[in-house]
Image (cartoon, rainbow, N blue to C red):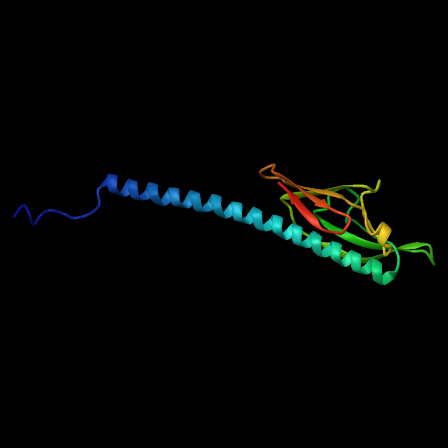
Length: 160
């Protein structure tokens, strides 16, 4: 009769061990997903910069003049977006050709280049094809910095 009265189930220790294992897997998956998100944001920024640079190079050739990329706002932060402008010498006015609007709130993108202004110049003249320099991408959450060099040929090279 005593064997029939026995209730089968999990003990408190078994339940606690199971909860600890589930919680640890949850924490590991959150940290891994955060790392993947930051890596995808970095790749997205690099792809967007590369596309803007290609477009600016092509536009300089088709306009047969000098065009420039600059940040969307007056600060040095390029993470909000870019403006492609053309200096029309016939009417002595700068025209905005294209705007890229980005949303990378966790990143700060700055440019340090050969030009004294905060811009990248592109020309149809092969001798003065473009100004070179580097982008510094700073993750605001982790304070990790990536340096991306832009060479005279328009290639972005990520420095680790």
